[in-house]
Image (tube, helix red, strand yellow):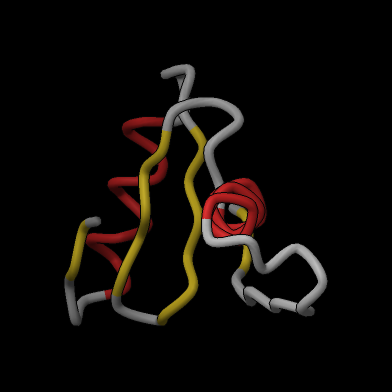
Length: 66
């Protein structure tokens, strides 16, 4: 997670890491998540609900993929 209240800094960060093989997600205006390929909220939610035996429940995750 990278946090900043300056949108210019977050934009520069996204540009700087664009060549890397990572996913970037911005779910809050002041935070960017940097994750390995294939790791995201949907995958984590699915894994956690499976582990906890909650596959029959609906889970929602919201964010913006950059």
